[in-house]
Every structure is written in structure tokens, then in C-alpha cells.
Amino acid sequence: LPKLWYRESERITSLLGNLRPKYLNEYIGQQEFKQVLKIAIQAACAREEALDHLLLYGPPGLGKTTIALIVGQELGVHCHIVTAPALERPRDIIGILLSLKPNEILFIDEIHRLNHITEEFLYTAMEDFRIDLTIGKGKVTRTHSISISPFTLIGATTKVGSLSSPLFDRFGFVQRLDLYNLNDLCRIVERTATLLALKLEQNAILEVAQRSRGTPRIANRLLRRIRDIISIDRNLNFVSMELVNEALSLLQVDSQGLDSSDRRLLQFLLEVYNGGPVGLDTLAAGLGEDPLTIESVIEPFLLQVGFLKRTHRGRVVTKDGCKHLGWY
Ligand code: ADP
Image 1 (tube, rainbow, N blue to C red):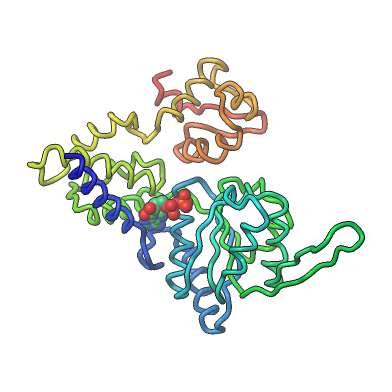
Image 2 (tube, rainbow, N blue to C red):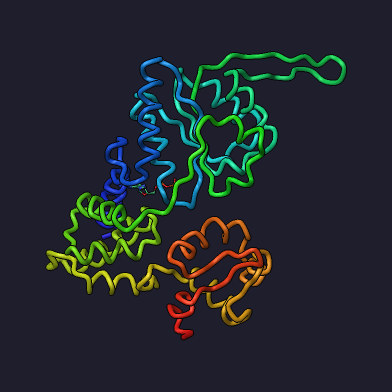
């Protein structure tokens, strides 16, 4: 049995690996950005040059890593993926920069978490494709410059405000990824369902899309849970809305797509501060969360569905937010 289970989970993992769109035309939504990117990719190909450095920011799960892999695929070059906390020592970043082949992509996730020294190596690397090494100590130090291949840095962050300006200024493109609208999410749900060999009724597709917090990664995660339920009851041919509802209530995702941390935030504002206004830091301290996580991960969706408002005096729960939590 364990062996079977292992094989099944391995099969699912490989299926999930294929969920990422490979080319730009498979990437759903973000139309204007795709247009700009397409032109830039064509120009870089024609000139046989590296694409300009690109900074992507926005809440997690909106497709930043996917974009980096797509750019690599479209340019026909390898995309190296690292997260900033893994670049601890100077030799980590130097090693990667020296190993890059012409026009390849270096994707750094959570780029706001780079340490100073690593960041400084990136300045000259990004601007002049050069690494400056300081050799020796005290009075006898000298700088030795090493050329590296032209490359494209793609940085991703949920906290663009935490980036230093010298780093920020070195990106040729800066793009915010917004939460997806319902129409695009329905297309993403349909696409993933097909890849997972799940047949969803039309209203079931809409239901999953509505409960995905505007986020493709959540849509995919919900579909995987639905798939778990289906694999228990193999007689099911079509996934109905009822089954979707059942699966999602197990996951504590409510009818509007709010999860437990969203509801906790609204509940806290209502119960302790009568709905607000409350400043971000007070809210963060009360919830025991990091202010930046609240601002960049939890709030965007609550603002999008209109349950929360940001005013100059702080956060306020809207009438719709009160109604949703049963306060009216
Ligand atoms: P991020 O790097 O922003 O956290 P990812 O690129 O890892 O997000 O995307 C999360 C998942 O959502 C991926 O597995 C991918 O399959 C899916 N996804 C993201 N954006 C899209 C899109 N525009 N179209 C289709 N699938 C998408």
C-alpha cells in the first residue's frame, strides 16, 4: 500500500509540474503586461541581446515564477531559479553570476530579502555585466573586475516598498501583477481541470473561480482538493457545484472566497474596534501578524471584494464586510 500511495503521489506531482503554462499565449489574463513583454522579447531576440531586467511584484500565487519560466522558454534560454535567503554568502551570488551563459535568466524570488553584500554585487552585474572583487586587506587592497555574460535578472517580491532604490532603479521593467478577475479565473480553473482530467459543470467552474481570492495558485489548490474527493468516490463523472461547496467548506473557504485569516482580520476590527479605523501597526500587533504580510498578502483581496477600505486614519470594515460577517 505505501508503495502504491507513493506512486500515486509521484504521478500527481508530475501532473502538477505540468500545470504551469509554458508559453506566453497559454498564460491567462494580464493582457497589457503580456503585450509589453511580447514586444520586448521579440526585440531582444532580433538584437540577440539579453532582455532588460524585470521586476515583478504583487501578492503570492499570481504567476511571477511562471512568467520567469515563460520568458526563458520564449527566448530559448535557461532560467535559473533562486530565493534571496539562499544567497547568504558572497560566493553564492558570485558562483551563480559566473555560471550564467549569454542571455540566460536569473530569477530571484523574495528579492526584498537580499542582504547588503549580495545586493551590491548585483548592482555592477546588472548594469555593466561585471563583478568587482576586492582582494587583500588594509592598505594593500585592490579591485579586480571580472566580466560576466549578459543576462536578465527577474526579481519577484510581495513587498516592493522594501526594495532599496539603487536596486529598484536598475530594473528596466517594473510590473505589478494584480489579482485576477472572475472571467480570467474561470479560464484558469477550466484549464487546470482539463490538465487534471476533472470534468466540472459550468456552475462548478464559476464557484471555484469565485472562491479563489483572485489567485491562480489558490484555484489550482482547490481543484486538487476536489480531485482528492473525486478519487475517493470514483463513480463521479462530473463535478457538481454541491461537491465543490462540500470540498470548500472542508477547507474553510467561505462563499466569497475568504479564508480563516481574512475573516479573523475583519472579525478583529469589528469586535475590538467597532469596525475601525485602525492603523496598520495596531492591527498587526492585535493579530500577531507582520504588518507587511497583512498589507501584501491578506488585504489586497479584502480591498478587491470591497469588504475593507483604507482611509488616511486607518483600515475600516465596509458595510458589505459587516454584512458578510453577519453584523447587520
Ligand atoms: P508566484 O511566483 O507569483 O507566487 P507562480 O508563478 O508560482 O506564482 O504561480 C502559481 C501557480 O498558478 C502556478 O503553478 C501556475 O500554474 C498558476 N498560474 C499563475 N498564473 C497563471 C496564469 N496567468 N495562467 C495560468 N496559470 C497560472
